[in-house]
Image (cartoon, rainbow, N blue to C red; front, side):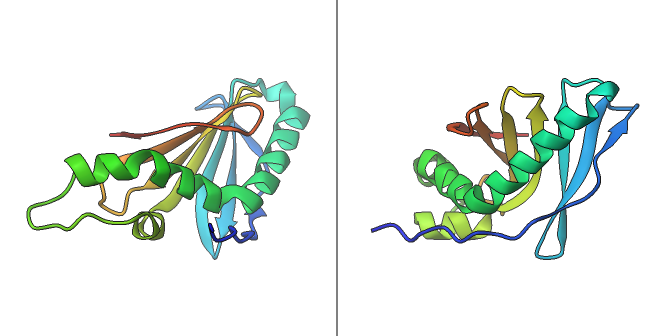
Length: 146
């Protein structure tokens, strides 16, 4: 029996368009920690669309951030234990994997899905964990990068 993921209250800052990145940007605040939210593939004139995406994403994350971590663990735990153990390091379990990873930020591709970036807690020696989610808010893949 899997423990049910707890809802996480998230504050969303005002959305602003960055001429530098040509994306909308905002900040998601969870437990007094700020995380970047970037919404790309929209034009400056698409503010209402960007705002709608940001609010949908915020609501989805409140209910599913724990599930995103669980998904990452389900896809990457075996890789960690088979290929990324330091000398004398014991294999870890899913619970430990989930505990050590932390949200870094989210990059949204317009209305075509998004990627959630997690700090790996040194599981993969400082690489970023990426969880890809499609436009229907279904988990697609988890990988490491960097």
